[in-house]
Length: 271
Ligand SMILES: [Zn+2]
Image 1: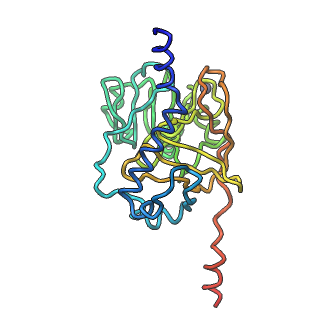
Image 2: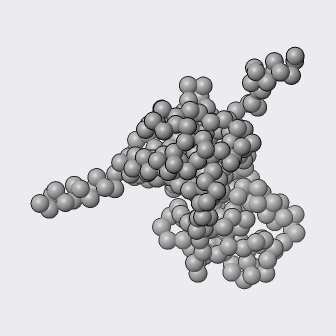
Image 3: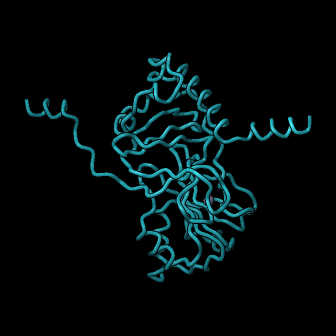
C-alpha cells in the first residue's frame, strides 16, 4: 500500500504527465475562448494544430487572445540557486518579498540603499547599466551572488558577446531566463550552464522540419498560443543534466535570417 502511494505521488509529479495535463487544459480553453482555435475543435494533439507565424501573431494578436482573461499576478523570479539573496529586479514586474524587490531605475537611491547581492533584469537594461558603470556615471556596489538576465522570443537569447561583457563588468555567475509574452518563465539556465531547462508546465518547445524553434504557451491565460514559429533556431537536449534535473534543455538559440515575404505577397507586389 505504501509502495503504491509513493508510486502515485511520483507519477503525479512526473513532468511529462504534468505537461500533457496542462496542454490538454490549455487547448480546451483556447478552443472555447479564442477566435483562432475555435476553428480547430477536433484538435487534441499539438500535431493537429497549424503552425502560427510570429508576424501573423504580432499583427493580429486579437485572434489568439482572450480579452476577458484577468492579468496574471506578477511572475515569480525562480532564483537559480535555492533561496534568493537580496535581489533587485529592474524593468520587469516580478513578485516581490523582503529579499526580492522591484525597482524602476538603476539610478534610484532606494536601490543603492538596498545594496543588492544579485540583480535580475532584461538584457537591454543590464547593458545600459553596464555602460553607466563603465563610464563612471553611477556609483555601483559590486554584486556578490548572481546576475539573472531575462530574454525572450522577440529579443532573442543572450549572445556570447553579451555574456563576456556582463562577466567583465559584474564578475558574478550569469543565469539566463527565457520568458514569455506575459513574463512567464519558459526556460532557465541552471548552475551547470549548459543550456536552459524547459519549464514544462509553461511551455512546449519543438524544432520544426526547417530547424525553426516552435513554442507553445501553456502558462499565459491571455494568449494560449500553440506552435508559434519563432524565427529562432535551437537544439533540444533530452536526458539528465549535470545539475541532476531531467527536464529537456534548450541550447544554441540563434536568430535566423530575416523573414522573406511569402510568394503570394510578392506576386501581389509585382502585379
Ligand atoms: Zn541543469
